[in-house]
Length: 278
Image (cartoon, rainbow, N blue to C red):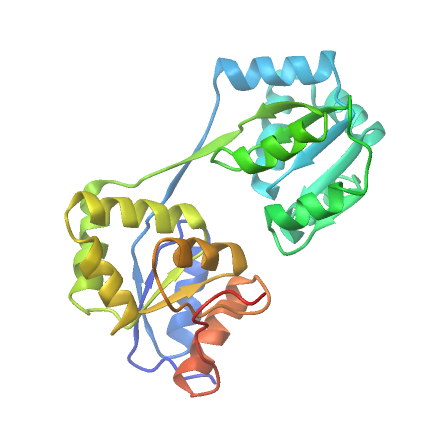
């Protein structure tokens, strides 16, 4: 499998761990193209600070973490404010739910154990896990993962929970110049495959293509000469919902697994799915 990406041009749209992925592409004989389709801004604003103060003064019954990065950002801010120990004490005594294995690992590194966990990183899985618990009248603090979570918030409120939200970072689009370069290469068939590691990357690219009047051309490229590759189920769902009919994704949501699956595809041992499995 070592050289099965020989000569293939692989666009990497994820801003995090891009160099690591690029090295993996090179080791497999491919040519990595660094084309970030998402930026992330850690927030240091009054809303986040006041949210942390309120968290400390009015600890919730449940804390729901949706990303390991969000957990670390919250503790980074808490340490900056001198309240990290108080925050940890509250978390140690409340009920914790976690979305995704990375979030679980980040919690465990801080000796915090979630009683609800969803390793596939989906909102649906998180809801399934929480549905077995009494939430009526409970105060729930939800850490957002760069974007709003209307479905999860609506479900929590339907269960009778009082939902508060905290946003430690948000996703932003990269410059139009960066997105235009990626779009031009995709539409022109100048890359063999494009990888996505989060749904916002898909959204920002599609929004830019629509703004440029090239959405249909982009979708045609992703259906034809360019193979769309997702890191996992949630990102793949973002591609399907955007109108992309076929997506290659590994069974395990790991960046390394994504590249191995891509190598398997070019070796004839893997095929993209035309829709999400039931």
